Length: 186
Image (cartoon, rainbow, N blue to C red; front, side):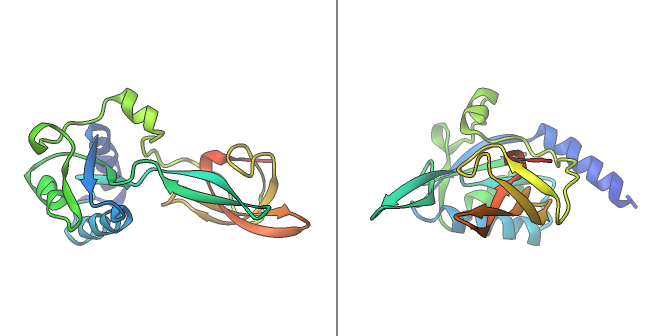
């Protein structure tokens, strides 16, 4: 029987062989499809075949009646991006997920994205960062709408690669969720 470290190492090795694929979905169902695939991967023990499911989004600032609000929108409505190893079982699971209309490629045959395409989408490979952050650490936001703000770490989520930080805005503390690569420890 493999111990946990061996299992993790095997998974990391397999994830290096995985490629990124694009799946077409009903417009507006991207997040539902993502959740459904993640749930099925969990239920069927397919973590070693399907590694990541992403709905690429971008932040934008909406100015309404003099107030600026940071909002998020999907970069590619109707598409979900997956990092996976294609085999009969993983293909079938994804292809038969409610809301999925098919893989992007000729004749619905999955064609992996090139490394350049993956980089252009802003999708980084999952390498669990060795982040030495903990609650109460002081950080500086280095990118995104809160760039140059200073803050205090409230919560670190290694799995989602997110950190919740209290930043001081307009004279009061506001909790914002940021990616690891958007902050640096002070």
